[in-house]
Image (cartoon, rainbow, N blue to C red; front, side, top):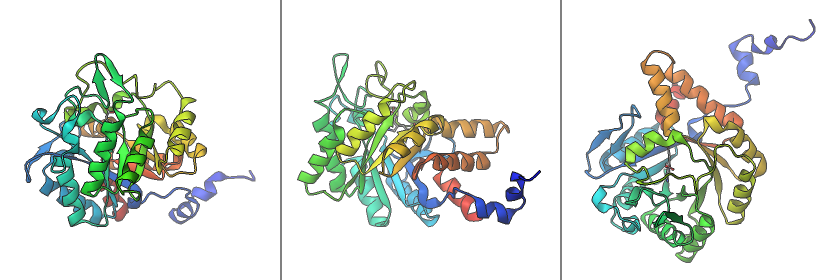
Length: 324
Ligand code: PBG
């Protein structure tokens, strides 16, 4: 035999020399759930290790992440039902839960990238990402609500806003509103190809944000489709997005790879709640090694082309990388 691929795998040193993909804590964004009650802590049953946190604990969690090299957090507010209404009014309250959380985080950790989610669902009594009129999720009437939300988040100090609602034209609506309000340096990370996935189940439990009626298939993408990714990418680029996201992650590696090839913009992948839950569920039964499978999942996302990875396992992965 002239050719033996195993020679390049023979030992630690040669493997490290030829390794094509390196994971680093700098790749990760940690999603965090915030709730009222400074010191409150409500574990999320279907996401072991994750909890809805009061602002004080939220800041402590972000500090823990920062100490391990994680440079960004993505915030999701868990609102009391009494604060929700059809038009997501609470989303623009300058003294709302999310706005207070952003201010507290930026005060404690000025260097930490604070990314806020733009969509109606955490604030909506209908649990949809857009405005519900009759049995329709109406697009154009949703845009000013999203724009107002983004400006309010920027005023609180968000570094980047992340529209996850999948309304048409939202990136342009946000860019225009942010610029008009003087926030031309606030970035937009667009959930560009976000699929109508069943892997979001634990997240909706965490926020109690599941749609009260119907599903999200009239705005999120059909898991069967690939070609419409190119339209979404072209639109978001033209509308001024700074980064493009693919979501979910691991079941959509083909999409990560495709979007990577379609755009020069940085690509993010979201290792979603259901993916995280699966790892823990199997590990609890002794069927999988959580640590090893987490790192392998994140490595696979990066290898497929993700520059940025949103993962609930950011702290776990960062501390594993530090020990390795
Ligand atoms: C909603 C939103 C969802 C997630 C992030 N933003 C859920 C949904 O679209 O129903 C899912 C994240 C996850 O599952 O980890 N705007």
